[in-house]
Image 1: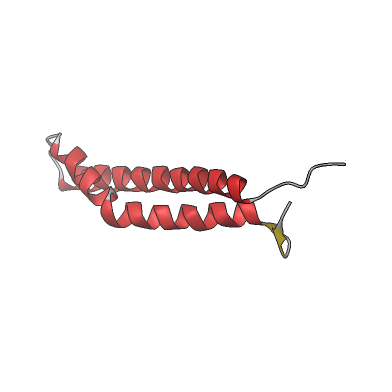
Image 2 (image 1 turned 135 degrees about the horizontal axis):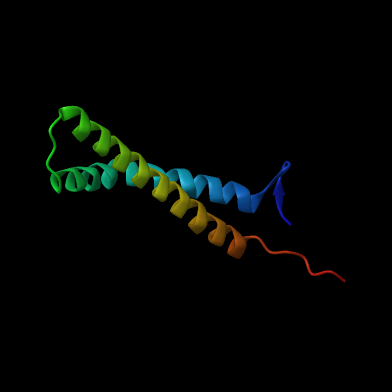
Length: 86
C-alpha cells in the first residue's frame, strides 16, 4: 500500500476528488435543481419556499460529495497498486 506520510494515497485521492466534485456540484447543479423542485409546488408561506430550497440544495450537495468520494475511491484503487504477497 502506498502512503504519503501516514495517509494511504487512495484516501487522499478520494478526499481531493470528493471536494472537487462537491464544489462543482455546488456551483453548477444545486441551485438550478433546487429552484426547479420549488417551482413544482405551490406554497402559502415564503418560509416554506426557503426551507424546501435549502433542503434540496443541501441534499444535492451531499449526493455530489458522496459521488465524488466514490469516483475518487475508484480512481485511487486504480492508481494504488498493492504489492503481491510472496
